[in-house]
Image (cartoon, rainbow, N blue to C red; front, side):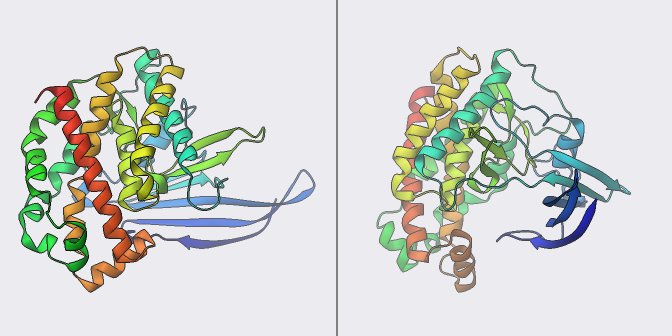
Length: 353
């Protein structure tokens, strides 16, 4: 019996309040004669006419359908918060009541925890390339990264002098890597064609740090819980990890000075997770998918954001989002862009293009 309840809105920098809302409900209840605390998460999504197509990469109803279809029940390697209840109102509003999963690691994740998450993600992706049947839901994304990269007007930012002119940016990029970015832009169609011809597996596709929870089971074992399944779909093995590493460094959740080491360790752990799941394929295809996907995911973002540093309003937003002063953000982005372009070079070699 519930004896008390209250709720508080949860927000994050970049949230779109017109289309999504998030709340934590908590209180006390009598359970088997004992007074206990309880909490849950309520996620509300409102229909967006601009994204009201199942094939859209940002289809507004995808996460609701993922939960209510049962696709997220009993996932291998990782977990989704348990679904406690759901409802839909006149096809305009969806509500999900979800398990409130506590984070077991206080503060930023060390590299070792990223490695464990990478192994869990490898097991998740690898299982559907081994012997676990791949779900075939109509609402899945199937060319998520291509849609995302094509949607961004990034080559204009690459070629604009304004992108590289702010003093903070000019300090980190005395010679902007315009030629390397233009080469990546020219290679985009071929890279995506190759990625989409590879065997596809079930993927979260937004599993960067903000959407991963390091949770501990009652027996002490660590598990990785993934939240926000809005982009769930199919992708080649390796693309999942590319977004984990790239996304966690774009917003500086991970230490930029450890990027290269973390990237290498995470890939090794991811491959071990795939082997744990019973996958016995060619690791070179996974390495190609990781290298190409990481470059295609993160490199187009960075010129766009670098060009916004000069705007005081945008700079303030970026500092709040990254929780660091602008100079540190630009330094982190410089390290990230260099690593992503190195991965692009590796992808060209693996594909012989």
